[in-house]
Image 1 (cartoon, rainbow, N blue to C red):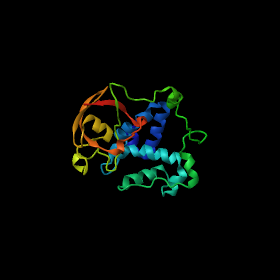
Image 2 (image 1 turned 90 degrees about the vertical axis):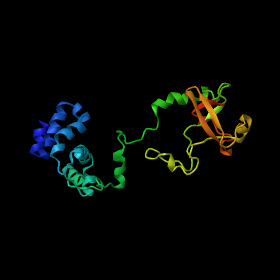
Image 3 (image 1 turned 45 degrees about the horizontal axis):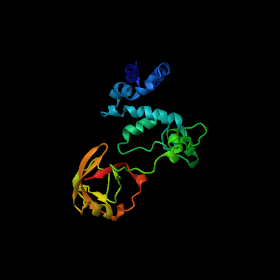
Image 4 (image 1 turned 135 degrees about the vertical axis):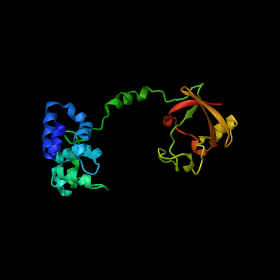
Length: 221
């Protein structure tokens, strides 16, 4: 049905899609696939993958019609045409300051501050031990520390690191002296989850590192 409606034009497709969604609410969850397979082949210039944007344009046009018109689009269909033509991005709405609260999805347009999943944890704070180390694991391992030269590494290899190319683990001067570690020394880190070897960097920044910032406790050998 949707393929036939798509061949007849987007107006016919819109009514057919709305009728199908009214009968079966699962259609919304399958919308990206359905749009790709039915509306997609009718789009110009190999724009099949852009079919999913048709659904987004319809939703925006229905929810924020004034903002869409202020952005220069007569309706949702015109917005979708602009999306197909705009290879470098499209302004899809233009909002007034007072429109901001429309984007708060709650009925009372208020932002609820309580996070139910955290309430029990908050209630247990005064009963939670503040010591995160044990005789077996006497050190705090602060994993994922943010440093001045860190950056997203999804698209990078290790050559981008101008300093500390090996990713040294910092340790306080007091602990380094006690363990006989110097800058560049290697040692084995052991936690309840496993072991690994690391190169160490002696740093005063680690003096008095708060246990509340730790991810887990560890031992060093």
